[in-house]
Length: 115
Image 1: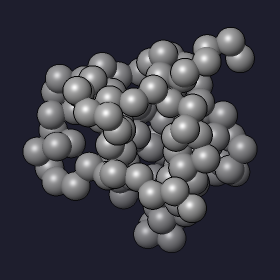
Image 2: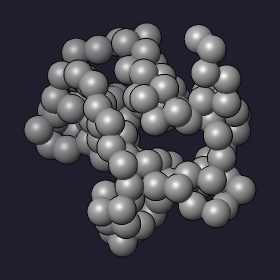
Image 3: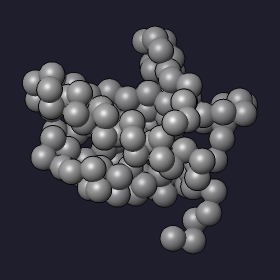
């Protein structure tokens, strides 16, 4: 299991929200800020609007797994924040993964864009 570097504090998230670009679909909003690092840093936000703690943690696990499995396909040097929308609570893993990859394509984050 590969580990990833996560965004930790409010300032790091705020920098990505303020200075980064965002694209969205029905289930996810992704903010991306280009950095001069050799690795990506990843953070996510799932608000109480999505559901109770059980649902929020499930959504968090699904998004984290989609990122973990595809992090080698992503370009490096970015801070990435994924915000879950309310509609994601009824999704299975495959729908979350498809939504994650869709916003990655919108940001041109994939190494190979010939899908």
